Image (cartoon, rainbow, N blue to C red; front, side, top):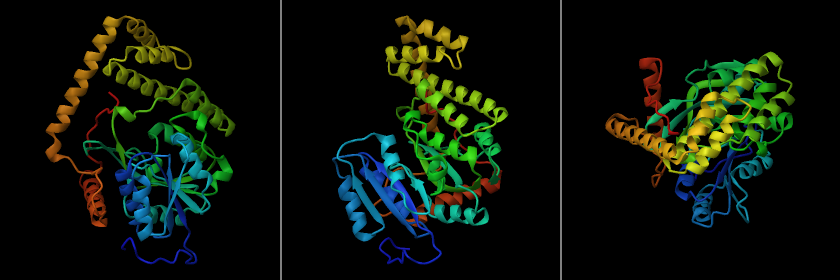
Amino acid sequence: METGESLNLDEPLKPMITTIIPTYRRPQQLKQAILSVLHQTYPHFRVCVYDNASGDDTALIVAELAKVDPRVKYYCHEENIGAIKNFQFGLEHVETPFFSFLSDDDFLLPDFYQIALGRFEKYPDAMFSATDVIISNKMQVIMRYTLDNYEAGYYSPPTGLLELFQKGNLTWTGILFRHDVKEIVGLLDCNVGAPHDHDFINRIAAKCPFVLTRRPGAVFINWGQDSYYFQSKAGLRRMIANLKKSNVPADILRPIEHAMIRRYQRRTFSRCLYYLKREDGRNALMLAQELKKDPGSNAVYAALEALLRWPFYCSLFGHCVRAIRDTQDFLLELIGAKRQAVSPRCPDTYLESDVQNIKAQLEEQRQDSGRPKYCNSNPSI
């Protein structure tokens, strides 16, 4: 289907989908994201772009696409309201039966909506339908699949929520939500901080059934340590409180709370290493002090905090982290000739065949090995 093809968006029995794309100063990557939606095999959607006052070519690029395809809508804030509030703004204005979130630097595979809606037809009480998501780093190496550890199928609450913490977070880039979830769990909780997406998914899974399919539906570009988010201790407590309000049984909540604390520790420790790599001893010490506090206090983190008070150890740890990161980058370059390309660059025309070829390679890989081969690198160091 060509981008400019005339569509009857009022065709009966075909539910409309809203694609929420918040953006800030990534015009070319945004173009790729929009085009990946416009090339969906399921055509009944609107693409709503919410510009966080970029002040660059963003408006021009969206206007050019909107001229060719009226399904593209654009709204620009008068000032930058922040990334989370921009996602929230888009969610508040959803009026269609289904919606999805798409960051401006990620993109969809062409049959994402068709796959997700197909699972809703089989399981009409599911509140979200998740496809597999390819996680690729900035060097175009496929790092992992989000559903590696999952079985495809139907998950009921609250055991489905426990599965999310035992087998790994879902990535909402590959999730299609029903509009009804807004009435059941409300909007995003901006006070959670960076993992507001996981909090939103968790609150839905605590109360509602969901369905998963192992077919890839989207590509998430992980740009490395610069994008590695930090969650405050207050945000962690907020996430736990949100699950308690969802009336999750105590025997389910207890292991989930422990898992959330462990994830918080790993992410904060990774961010601490990032600051050491940048020779920012002050912020590294601040995070070590956070780790030493409850919940989840640990003697190892207490020892780290004590050592980072000394400039010598800050410098020594920084040199070690940089050496590890440089070695990692070198090894990734060595395997560059064998890597599978998931290009973050936006070509002049986004051809459906491009992403179809990627998807075909991934399906062939799964059939040959039963499990995808990927580069198991830690982008946070």
